[in-house]
Length: 471
Picture 1 (cartoon, rainbow, N blue to C red):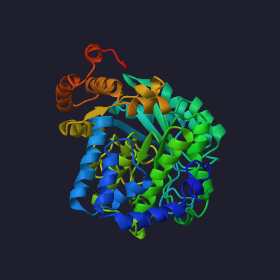
Picture 2: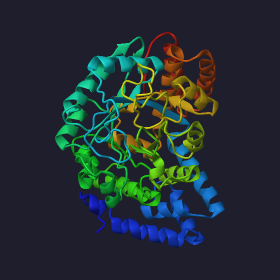
Picture 3: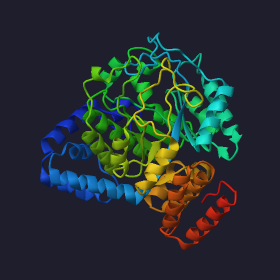
Picture 4: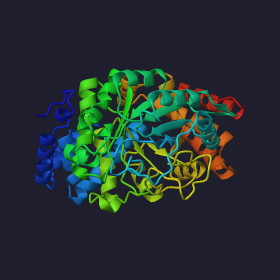
């Protein structure tokens, strides 16, 4: 029985409800009257239901699909403007006791060298990331209570925040680790994490259990209910994601919208981010074994329809995607991307060797500077901002600012100031030249004249050697 307010996974992600929606969308995918009604509701920019979102995803009418894409662009611009937040993953350990069929870290894989970073090795990795210009990291680690206990994660977070190298500093640490207890989420909150990220992989319980035959992650309900426990532990910002290609994309698209709706209704605030990774080749994992792969066209439409359904959420695309694919989805909804990423343990301080095992193959291998340069040439403002997290604008406080569209007076100047820091400290000469012109142009678009004047003063101060201004 579907119940958005239930704490039970099989009730707020109801298989019966999803299958009803699949049938409804199939029946109405070319029904102009229904699609026009949905688009009219969507133009209010307050979101639409999982059922209506699936109808838009399934729509085959060319003219209506153009309306869908344009609306996604309009919503992205309205809430997030042309800012793109930059981050990098940091892999701490590939020790794992789970049996996930799609991940090379699975416990049965005896071929890969297992590695866990020491605190000194973490320090060196972080310095390498700081030397690129990164300010925001996403910590990744396999699930292994002996090799990767929570105490190790907490110690690693403390180490990362303590490192000051030249003008470098990591100002926000997001964490992507296995589902855990309310008590442990409380400890992560006390350690100062930003967003807690956990990918569902698939919302189809039967497929989930087949794909996770062993290990703690095999418990579908415990995994799916993790975000509720994280919020009970005081974590304001949580990030959802599914691995498109594992299961039927229509099913998982509906499931992730339902999960967002559940968090909004039950916990009072929806997901801070939604990630849209696609299954990639890695070590002993062959994506061709899975028969649910999606085309670039469908990937773009998934991004657009999530943006329409959940207009306030941040959306993340990683270096799993090619530069061409990433460029296509930037204006359809994506607000965060990684740059210069390495997906192996210790990958930032050593050149990747043939025997290294990455969690997935990186398709966009450009350096951070190349990605920043590319974004600016496309008219985007690369942002290294972490101000909202550090000013306590998280959870419902962040969402209320975003939904009222007042956050532009914080985010845009903060993006420009952190970009200025990057240009001064890390950029190549060409990137610096492009960036300086972009900053001067974008300063004029800040609507509040007081904020605009102050931001200009802060940017001048950054040029003089001062750092870390924020609104």
